[in-house]
Image 1 (cartoon, rainbow, N blue to C red):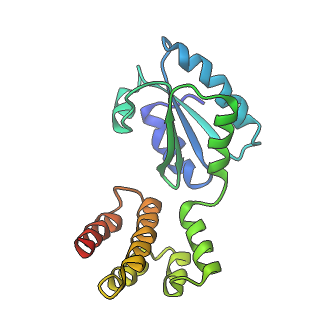
Image 2: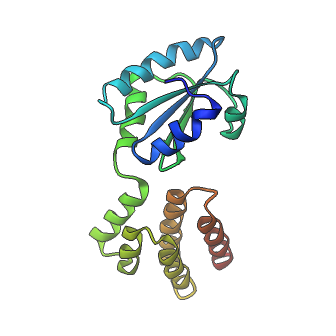
Length: 187
């Protein structure tokens, strides 16, 4: 479906809270766009409604292109839970587009982290809060572990915190706060 700036909030941001939405940024004059769009349409169609495609003409929706830092086209950005979770620029083969889309259908990075920590019994204190979406409580526990940890454990704490930051998104206030605190604690 073609989406305009007026429809973007509802058609992409809100809809991505229900299922992944892939946004294809294109322009009529762009030959590579004409190559990629049919591949996207075909691969998304093959997923029987599990992913939605929104097409944004960058010539008529310049503000959206600017807001989402589209520097070249074709540009593809995948939205889940109201934010960009993956993206690529340029033409891709059907196989690579398929891998990209399949990555959107699996568990999120945060869900994978909860599963991994639950199976390994590593940091059991944060599994519950993470499963409940209480990222701040999990991050607070982790940051408090840094001062007494040896180098290997400090690195693992850093890795887990970075995974949580990625799940929250770069602009999330909790991620921003704890990223600074982690930097101060480590350096």
